Image (cartoon, rainbow, N blue to C red; front, side):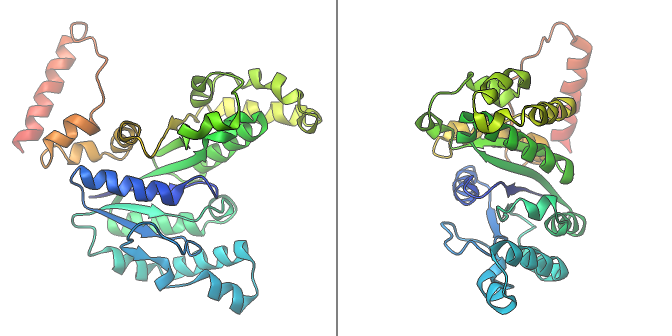
Length: 300
């Protein structure tokens, strides 16, 4: 099995910076990392990518040849990639034996919600190459400073979770810069836990632009609360502890922690396994079963 991450998020959320920092962090842990750039508009890569979509199709060429704008050009590029999925598959085959994959996708949200091409690319790769992927959806943390933008970010995150049927982790990126944008109406835990959105109504009504959409906002908040799916982790890509905590969540979500027990017990214990908050004396039989199962894994 091959493990990796699908990195998505709106433009400016820090996807490329994330892929660069995450690849360096995972390399320090001893993992062989391959970054796959699937953003044909990303022509200034800070990382060394193992596969680059520009070798197949270039956004600038598509825009010039078909008289398309950036958004239309990106949709065309994703359609072209889907129809030439064999090219990407052949590029990935030499890497799947021993590499951890990071897929850097474009930031245009319509590629995932209004069109199915990007999602189809992911689904075909999973089936053909037996990939175990987690979606990491980056949202710029400064959106928390504006109640209207925060609700929009919640809707975007919920849409991504419903459309892309994969393990999904929403991340407030650039959390170290959030104080530069002003004071938050509530503490940070309120925004990461998505707690009681009705409390945002007062702050939304203070903005004349949002007041006239009061009823619509209430309905949207009820939809988000009704699904009860969205919450956020936080990330400062320059902070090793912050990145390490996110890696723990990702490794749990796609099952990497179970595959890496034999090959890297040290990494498993320090990074992939979270601290346990468990009452061992309350469930002695269950604890005994867990111990036996772990021993069986090591003996295999």
